[in-house]
Length: 188
Image 1: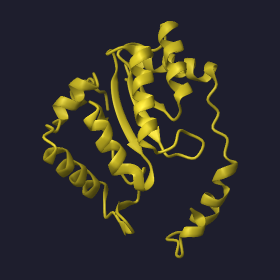
Image 2: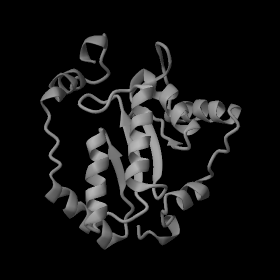
Image 3: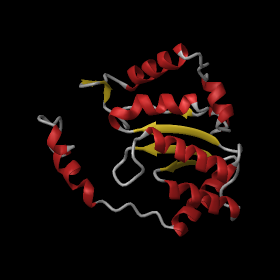
């Protein structure tokens, strides 16, 4: 990505991107178990970001151990370096694997990085999943056109899904679907 940007907004950005291929993301089973314990202590809902098929099996392991609580919220992530590719066949593969491991007792959402963001999340919605968009996943709104905001991406996927006949979840619907406790039950 560093080679594609001609002008950087901040002096630190180019080096950060160039050095990112040397980052190590520690994620041991012991670390994950500790996070489950901490989240349970605070009544926090866990989003299981699954960057590859093995992550679904890891989640099944933690469900079997009783550390993860059903129904899990699975965010399948496509197109991140080191993870499963942003390909329609892989979306189907991840969904079939989740169905086999968890039956119908899970909430499924998809995000895709870069130019595959809109096509793959549209596919996921047509397969019964939920979608995520945002500048964290893609800086673009269309071919060669930078998105002005997260809201612009949300508006685009909303138009696409409504034209396909889907209902859009309200904030209250989303809290219910994800089993979130809501702002009124959070100590700030």
